[in-house]
Amino acid sequence: MTVNDIGKIVLSVGVTQLLADLLSRKFVFQSDSYKKSVATFQRAKDKHDKTAAALAAKRLLYEAQQQSNPGGKKSSQQISAKSLEKDEKKLKFESNDVTATAAEVARRHTSANFSTAIVFFLLYRILAAEYSGKIVALLPFEPFHLLQKMMTFRGLAGAAGFDSSTEFHFLWVKAVGAGGESITKPMAPLSPDVNHASQACAFAFIYFLCNMSVKVVINMILGEKPPPGADEGVGTLMNSPQSKKMMDAFGVDPQEVTGLKKKS
Picture (cartoon, rainbow, N blue to C red):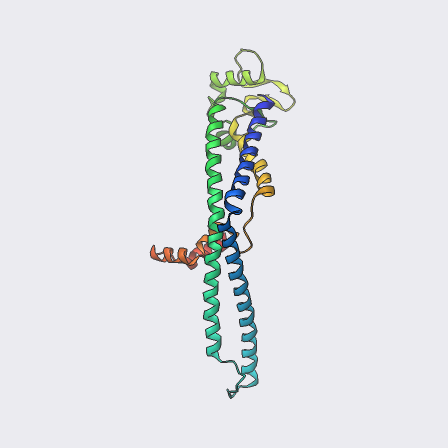
């Protein structure tokens, strides 16, 4: 166990995320096509909002008209139900336009995120091969069994039963610098918090912590956020007219999918 090992993992995750954000900003979010997509979405959204506000005011006038003129006498300034229906169709058309342009913006963000995910998968494979069978840290607590199996013992020899694994004991001795003697069950305390081989930590747990902290912080600072209305990721893509037509073709009700997404 060395500070250099942990530092190398932290640095690898940080630099990879930094490069991913800078490259995405350069080649995706600063491109003319992306700026055009955002501008088109914003125009469609503004137009939809104006139509929705005008229709809401028109409905109020129509309701007031119905109450003040129950006999249904017509005048040149009266609002007809047919006019409302026409405006509602217009609003629906503009709503479809908004979802389609929002999906185009979201698609570009999703593509950039997918590319970053592939890069981090490759980084994980490279670092996992480099730190295979190596204890990179000693935890100040004994993890519960599921965490040991999934993270802290992942890639260490004898992870399933360290008490009887001489190979794992050797890794433990090598990590703590206690010589070449065989160790069984309770270990001689290294510090008040470290006294058992179950506190050994593999690369995977450190990598996970870096992804939950360093990676997230860098992305929050340098990452490009989609505009409001196109910021639901895959949900925005699923709301587009093209996606709904595709779901209809496969016999999936878009309304049910939308309802499940809202509940979750």
